[in-house]
Length: 295
Image (cartoon, rainbow, N blue to C red; front, side, top):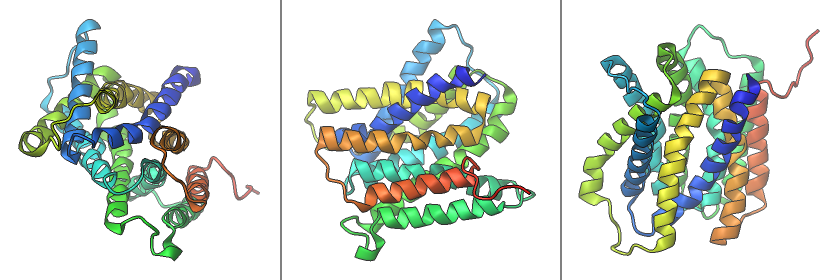
């Protein structure tokens, strides 16, 4: 069973890690809402084609569409706009690192949704480390360094949405036992429909369509939102929401490397240190690292 989702896990981590680079490039000619719509619509088209080729039936149950609309808002619409807004002022490296907070937000979401589940000591300790890590990444002792606080908050709100999306999917979507392709297709159709009016009103920033930004948006949509959500649903279905959210252990590494190599972005000493603290906190919260031995 493990081998069946491991490849999807690695592909998802690499693809989503590069997405922060793609967003930065897309903002050269699109507005934040234009970037969000572009990735969702291209992803939707990709999945519709795949569904047709595989002769996969798209679900027609309004309840399924309703739940997937909620997932689309939490995974695509709101975070897609917020990440793009943030990257107009912060580096793709910082965006990728903050994205690593997702597992901690997932723990918070699970505890919020399921009130009967009491928080474990390891979860509380992990969350504490996570918040310390975020403060370190932002260089809080320097007044948040060169990062405008409003745009950092956009990143944190975006990953909060991600955190709630994983347990919501597990609880309300997975019971329908649908295949990943139709679920992801409906999700992106919903997201594209919600974002379309905003794109028509204010989606294009510049009438300059250079090859690299266009190719970046194509990759962001086809892979970052098309194939990626098939992989994501596959992981949730076969390994669970916490495992799916932990793909963010891979994305900051990819984001940092891509930002330095392709965008020439600079990284401070405290950003990778803070990222390691965040990842350590996430690992503790998910009990991947045992701090206490059982008697």
